Image (cartoon, rainbow, N blue to C red; front, side, top):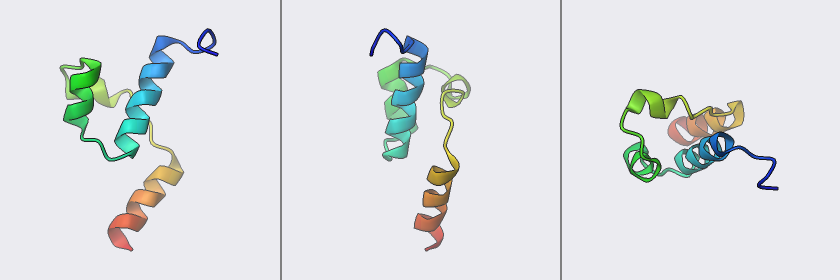
Length: 60
């Protein structure tokens, strides 16, 4: 399976999973080696389901 996934795809997936799990962006940036929050944010693409879950948690 690893032969089908690029390192870029794996990095994007890792960042998305970590952020969706509530890990702070700064902690993930430390792991991934990102220095710029702007470049880091390019890797995160939340789904509509994730955005809906966040809204439900905040606004119950």
